Image (cartoon, rainbow, N blue to C red; front, side):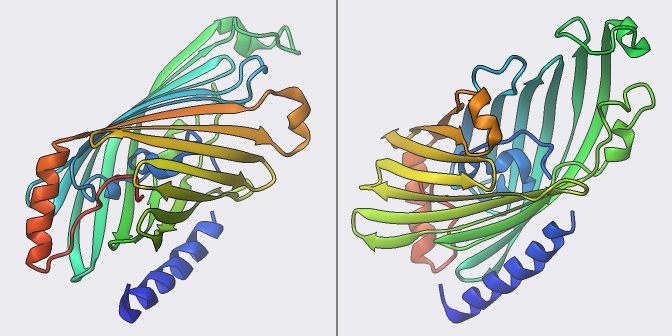
Amino acid sequence: MNFLNKTFFWVLLLFIGTLSFSYGQREPQYTQYMYNIGSFNPAYVGSVENTEITAAYRSQWEGVPGAPKTIRIGINLPFSNEKNGLGFNVVNDELGPSTQTYFDVSYSFQVNISDATKLSFGVDAGGALLNVDYSKGDFEIINEPLLSANSFNNFYPTIGAGMFVYGENWYTGISVPNFLTDIIYNDEVSVFIEDKPQFNLIGGYVFDLSDGLKFKPAFLLNYLEGLPLNANISTNFLISDVVTLGASYRFDNAVSGLAGIQLSNSTFVGYSYDYSVNGFSTFNDGSHEIVLKFYLGKDSGNKRKDAKNAKGKPKQIDTPRFF
């Protein structure tokens, strides 16, 4: 990365980092966030080299009844003009008696800042289906009028936006998954839902330590007004472009081990285990997360990429093995 790109990268980080600190974490949480960027930043969907399909499953706080469980299916579709992209996401998130199913469609448009840097803008629109079954679990206030309804079902529209900047070996982005948070507030359910916009800031870099070893630090910040900053940092090593090993730390929350393997040019599988480092550690057996990624047209995509590079144009991201 040349001096101009380095300067732009750190100035941008400082600017959007300042923004993010003025606003917690309500969206589904991922330890392997670097493989789920399209879930919370619509600007990412057009930056990939080939069509991607991602499946993720997270079981949080094993041994705790009603603990969160998340399933995500995502698709990123880059256009052949290397300027536009479409994304599709479906996320099912369970927590205690409540189940939320999110779905959205993303669109991104990107421009060349320089020969080595691209800037992508993205928007997404969709909705969330909220179901609360009051028959699940035990409640301290037995005669609470809200519980007499037995269940609650409602639909909420969502509109989000994001920005993503990247070069050949670095990236950063900021996003707001949903601006329509006031709609979620309702007198009938105000006791458990009063939402506000969440800001996400992500970034990472790839260092070539040798021909067969790459070092990939990354971070993710989530902040929601009224809640503490949720800060994640991770360090991964990519060995021979096949095996990934690393660790992650979520401040005042959990330490994690990560592992992944590139089964073929078109298939990647990743696993992470979280161990709580706060007082909650005595009440749970950790958290498990699995990610599967499929790259369609990988071989043909490499040929197209090489042809573009020969003309001196910036390329799109190879695969999430890098970021």
